[in-house]
Image (cartoon, rainbow, N blue to C red; front, side):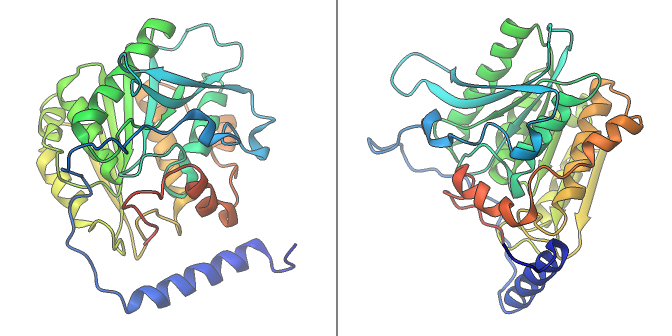
Amino acid sequence: MSRVPLFARQLLFNLRNNIANMSKPMTNNASLSVTTQISQKDHPAKLSQYSGLEHTIAAVKFPSIVKPFNLKVQDGIDGTVPAFLHLPENYQNQQSTAAILLSGAGGGVVGPSSIYLSMAHKLASLQQGLPVLRMDYRFPARNKYCVPDVLAAMNYLQTEHNISRFVLVGWSFGGAPVFTVGGQDSRVVGCATVASQTAETEGIRAVGRRGVPVLLLHGTGDRTLSHQCSERLYSMYGSKGDRKVHYFEGDDHALTMNSANAERMMCEFIASIAGVKMGNAEKEIVGKTLVDDSDKIEKMRSGGDLRGLESVE
């Protein structure tokens, strides 16, 4: 094992990234959506591909349980989505609010810098623990298919766990299904994104008209989707409701330099919408490190989050 302290390794990693990125042009890209037709080679990921991503070693002692399962979207060979449901220990369907975490154009189940894997454990382990669903898509980057996936997840949680309020979180392309569903379904009571695209996000206007709280996070050094995308979304939302945008100076598409802070902000945003008070005990849980910085990118690869057009740049 390396004798170099973790903080020093992370500092060196960030320095190398910054030096490498100085020579790369910024992007004006605003979309990672795919418009090509589905071919016979396109099939949803299988749950078995994500073996070992139920939890992290550090999360074993957390008072929550994880249920890996195939979420049924529709009948047929391509009618299920790999998913991981995190529930508070001894959960008796007492919560009316749940969070659904959506990845980008490649699908996946751990999110940018693996924050979804960490967030789900933490939120389910609070004193008033919240159900959290990490899910893939049947056909990533195609919003017309991803929207039914999200609706199926909401219907499942409502039927099986009596949940009627949902906070949707999306990374990159994931902003498209977040705001599409959020704009058409009144069960959505909060929307948050990390480095969202603006394509297929017109639903944010309806989200704003309903006054649904929105949190937008973006790195100003993002070379996959410009941080101007979040500027545009902030404007599209309008001034009626509760909107917040936060930029991480010089950070990349996966917020690798500020992932812990981004994760904390997300957890606090979701908890506030669910009416969960963040006392000292809750803040201690949210502040714990469940995925080492040195493991975050590798877990993104094994979790499918980097198999599409997404990157950590």
